[in-house]
Length: 308
Length: 308
Image (cartoon, rainbow over all chains, first blue to last red):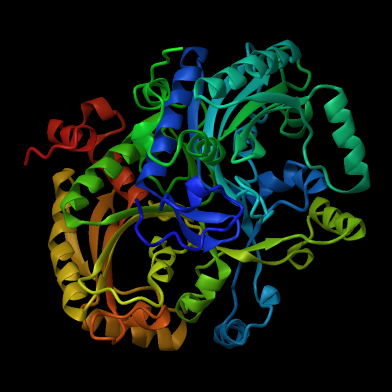
């Protein structure tokens, strides 16, 4: 436990997470964490590896930033402009530096003293995956097990809504049949995995937070056509999506020039697991002391064995 | 190995790293990595935990972003304005969104369409540590074992110079004697650790890349007063700093209002290990096939045992 360092954790989180030194400080939607939660993240990482072990997937890890060129190509700005984080840097001379420093020190808005770089914070891990297959045909399909930190600019005290968080995504790229089979398979498996962690699970039709008036129409379409589902569990008494299953049709195949065997744009689907949200739900359900968690949950997380 | 995905790795890296699918390309100074390198990072993480096990340290992990308030207070902008990454976000309405989208799609500079957020990319992990002790007296000293992703805006094909990378930092905060003892202790231990990995080690007096003309004076002072040393190993035939040992005097104690027992500003020191650089040096020295690495190195990384 992190003694005495956790006093400023915001009230949105349940007491099990606030009062036991599992998290430390920082600011709204951003926490550090101690050895206990790191153990939970490692356990989840291992348990998810076991889930995908038989699926001939390629394991890839990505840094928390994405090339701006990939981001611009991805059409993320069209759909979710309210969520991305762009990386700005200072490139001036010594006089410009004086002006920047003065702005920072006097508490002015120093937005104008920096310029956009070639980097954007990764809004999801799979955006790093698609360009790797650009210009190729994926006969028989490809499966990538992708991990990394993501950023979404929605600071909030809502439990589990972090600005910086880890996603584990299993991405499938292939024919329409291959991608939609992945969606159906994980529609079942994702909820079964979370249920084996001893959590009370609901699976719900869902939509992405598309921006603006036209975005509402897109969200309704997505929901009606069954393109997205979420695995929802409680953190405290607050329902939170801890995993989502997404069918993108040919959206990324078209954008990144990935073709299926017949030459038409490949389809893709992915399932994403939010490690922090699952860990917070586990603490909320089973308490802050890991040694007291149910035996079968501990077996699954730390020995990779399911006893259910 | 990541078959067929690594073709665009830049020429700056040695062939062992470029041609064996250990990395996948993204853009200059930014790579994804596969299962093999992740295994090396895990091994290094475990081996470094063993190094600090007897030192009564608190293990903390931090996300890749830092609250802007902490960053502004840290005086980083005064010393290293050329390196930080500030997170900008879009907050406009639908009409502003149209303008942003048009700028992105026509390849204009869209710097002006976003504003500074409350978040900055972490330039080092220890900046997340000091505020936790703000307003307190650290009698007997405090030791924190801190991990996280850092960002520095210096895109480069130089081997091991990444824009986004993991740092493991052992931070000591206490009296001048406690902090300087930490510096001396790790001056020996950091190089001994890297040497046990079978790497050819030099320890050098070093300075931080302070900005501008006055920065050159600060760098010279730092070097003359022996406040920074680096553990340097070859990646290919290029010498690269894989660890640094830093004595900050009362810099952070003063800024973050941390006091030692007598009431004066606490001193601090830290040793930082760059996981990617160590891993790249290991591949460069021992080859791309982990199973063929020397027995004692594999013992140290994967069984936590030193046989030297």
